[in-house]
Image (cartoon, rainbow over the protein chains, first blue to last red):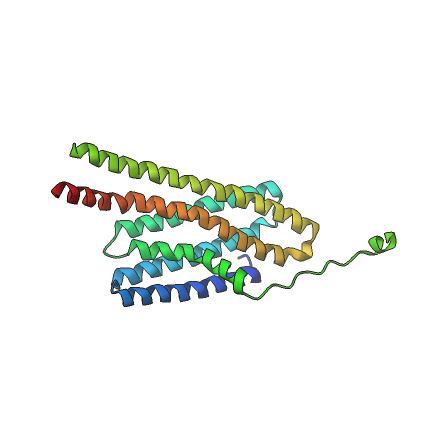
Length: 143
Length: 95
């Protein structure tokens, strides 16, 4: 079995944590507003698990694709993206087809949360150290 | 007349869902190009693999959510919206 890249593990952990916080917020809002029911909770769980799974699969795909040649990597990514979009579509159809088990809105919202998490981290999170590019010996000689 | 109104509602929802799914095409193409460039970058500087992969993952999730917005809207238009629109129509006719 292929070893999971530490970067993929770290990013998936961040997204899972953010989704947990987001799901708790959704449940809190539903309780306060009075919309809470079992389908709301089950839909939220289904959406959150799907979002984390989608992110993890995307990370694995990128880990594999960056080691391939350009053309093969492009095809791998397109195929994977189509497959994952189809998977999420099927999950949403399942939630829509079983309204007594899953709430469609609380299933759909967690799927959109990873983007918000990444955007918030980019805006408010710690800045990554910028790699310092030093001049090579040849460039110094030219000067 | 009622049949025509129902037909327009269902047809409109189906066309809208189809149009929303056009958004699913872009992320696949964009992600493919981004990964191709990442392969080039790692080929030039293999030591930057971790940084490039991390940036790629961040970029891909942002690109991919765009397609997901379209998918969610399409699913809602097919499974949820027609019922709501028909209810509105029935309430309007009832008045």
